[in-house]
Amino acid sequence: MGKENVILIEKPDQSKMCDLGYHVVSGHFRVCQNGTKTWVDTHLRKNRGKLIMHLEENLLFLYWNNSKKYQNIGRIKEYSAHNELDSIIQFWLDYWKQNGENFPDGLTALHVKTLIAIESSFNPKARPKTSSARGLMQILDTARNALRGTSDVKNNEVRSNYIDVTAEQIEDPVVNIAVGTRWLAHKFFLLRNQKDKSLKKVLRNYYSKTPEGDEYTEKILDLYEKSR
Image (cartoon, rainbow, N blue to C red):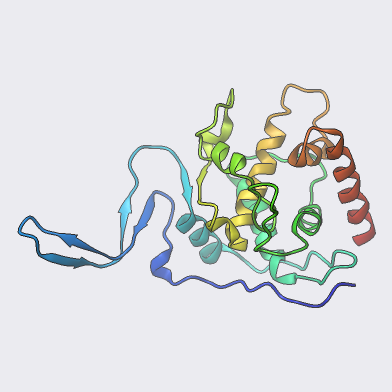
């Protein structure tokens, strides 16, 4: 079993969070026409347009103001328990389902926790030197771009639940798992016209469509079975 440790999950100040449809404007100096500077306190501003955009301040607000007490998922074999992540994982799976996103049959919170163990060994600051991946679920820049709608994806379903976060914001466990679970739903959507829309295929595509993806999937499913 790995060394016992706990990931620090800190609730932000309420002024740094806001509900969907709004964004936080940080305090700043405004330069008047006569050259004088006036301080403007941090405040909320309504988003323009009709798209449902999830910004960092929205994701944090949704979790910290709506999360309930969930049961522990359980320990991943050979890793610390990391029960502090259990509510986050279950909240985001529930949230995306309630907001129209679909996942493959059989996907459980324990699968997501196992994926986190394999991807980052529960290190929220994990950053490999060979890619842009970051955080617990190793979110790539390509995934962030797709979820904000800036990549060319045909029949793109992300417009129903856009996410727009920076690479730095991805290192917050709440934000990372929100994005990672949303990305799993998107990977499932991309299989809509294929016969094989299994959990195994989704996990494979989460990592890679290359043969290495098959090895990765077997590793997750094997560790999942050992951790049940």
